[in-house]
Image (cartoon, rainbow, N blue to C red; front, side, top):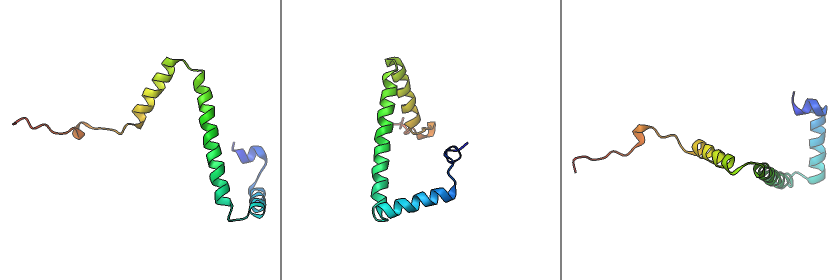
Amino acid sequence: MNLYAIAGLGTPELLIILAVIVLVFGASKLPELARGSGRALRIFKAETKGLMDDDKTPEQRELEARRREELDAPYRSPHDEPRRDDTA
């Protein structure tokens, strides 16, 4: 079930809401409004994540940090290792 079905909003309702927003704020202000909303949402998500992390033990935080490092690290195959010159 998607959010629009829960709120009872269909395509016509969303278009009317969008038209009202454009009339109220003006087309030139919409990018600035979207940027501000995105920043606020990013800050909100970071703060709520911080609150959720406060409930964890130090061991749980360390395990999650290791998992994140493993996921963020680029995959390295054995062929990526630099060759050693054994003749020198």
